[in-house]
Length: 168
Image (cartoon, helix red, strand yellow):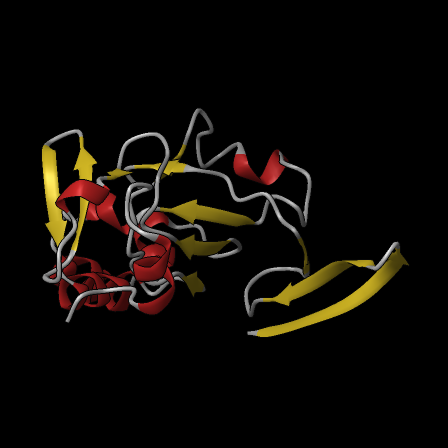
């Protein structure tokens, strides 16, 4: 994957930036790019046969939450299929895997601890260990992925937030 950033405007001491992603199977995608949310592996309200009718290249990068796959199909099965692209048959689209999902899997900062991050899912609270998350990312094989976030509650002191992300 190639990524480049350039400054295109300077005024009042601020600069606006734009970037370009070049994924192997997609056309160039300018950033900031809109990532379409997915639900259980499929785009919300858009069937896979309608995806090609969306404007390109802006809609060629899809968001998927790895947490949707924690309680269903196993990582081993996804890996043997060949990852998300082969499993969903969307070879011309890129996937960005981010655990945060504002629709179904909400971070639960009060239950997050040194073992892992906690999320409220449709099946209840789920504690995810970093090793399990990385195993799932390896089997999904997304084009881009974000690390498992350490959700810091608002009531935590600023000193703790600055000095320590995860208690070891």
